[in-house]
Length: 596
Image (cartoon, rainbow, N blue to C red; front, side, top):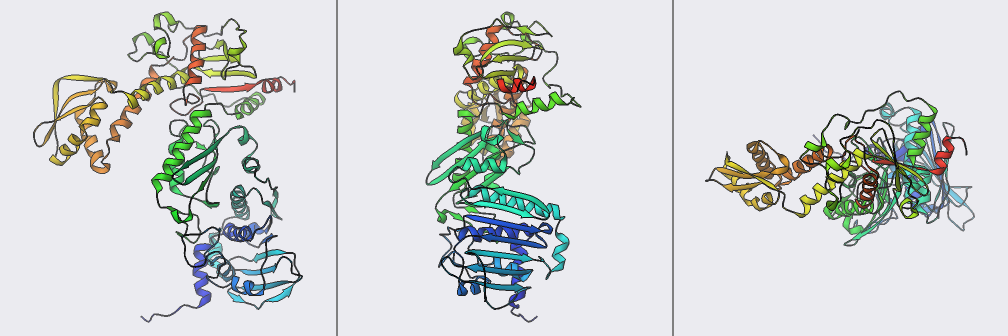
């Protein structure tokens, strides 16, 4: 077959297949051009979800005749000069405008600041008309009509007008979060007007415009620096979460990105603090030398590649976990709104706490720790063996130093499961089982991190036959396993002798455990399989060794639990990610009774 050079129009249409997927893609490219031009106000007008009309108007520096002619030609850009390792603008490929023009009817009117006359150029299906004088305000107006009229097959892949309008609005919000000094206005016959006034340097105010005012009260400030890579932004407390990941935003040097590494780090940072199927709310800004990140991965510019991905992931996980340990245990302020909603309507279902059930704490091998270890007294002295289905009141404590604490002073125990505590600003309701479950788990996990775990010696060592390579790998990690309570010895060239097993695991199939570890090390060369198993068992032990639902507590035990929660990072959520307490301000309570 003969190799031929494709026509310029066809080349642009092929490029449009990568750059322009839907009206939202067009909006993204035009808005980014406006931002690169120094715009302070950007208006987006749409019709038909952006399929019929999409107009972006800015007050940027504008373009002259020569720039306007080159703007619609492929690979013409003002953003880069000779190389791709110092990209400091949002656009840089020079593909957007010619790609858009090849599949639509596009018109651009631009006027340089300080000039009296503007100029216009039109592109229809890839065919360009000459530049001509036109009236216009300083800045640029880019109008796109009949998107994909030149490639009608692409129209079949678009969604409804409403869905396309929603996707376009989402793009505007995502970009607006990174540029709070710019005013954005989105309007059209198919949607109500969205106006995002400029907030200057107040990024949190812009975030509140996009994510709602509740985020301001539930946000934790992030500010970290490691080896020249900076991270700032805001992350929500674990109890302020959502049912999908649409409320997660990430930016690299101001560029909105959808990066798998960043999302993975965000999930890891909130591990064990959030229920499965729930997602944190976060806005992350990563700033680093442009030479350390490749933004030239895909024409859509949503993917990036970091030169040191481990550094970036570690920075995100470490910064968020440090912030959560510092102030992430507070309850979400939206709990009051939920209570108001339940007060207005009868709930259709009432979930049962999975910890409810009959359980004898006196026979538990992992019962709560004694007072010297930060826990409670012995079961026989604690009152855990009494069942009180009604409320248990606590004599009031007038010590303002106690009620001034974050979780206040215990006032009552209701339904033998919930502690009601008074603070200076309102009251706190604590789920005693969920709270103590977390405290016990943290104590067990701390032992994993700092001490050699207790082991139990096998009367008769168990011999496990394995391939010689697996035996070599296990022997190489023997010291690490010993710290975890698993003592292994080489038993000939093709066997391992198991002499001690972790006491936390109780009776186990040592042979199966060793084989699983051998497989894990063979694949990853990392004995994390046992650590994950131990942490899972630690969580299970914490659940069954905690203060159970239906156990009455003495006043000093309730207050001891509150003080221990205040001193333990992560105590705002149980091991399953559910909240351990909710907080109601006095004004919330007054609204419930119609006093406000």
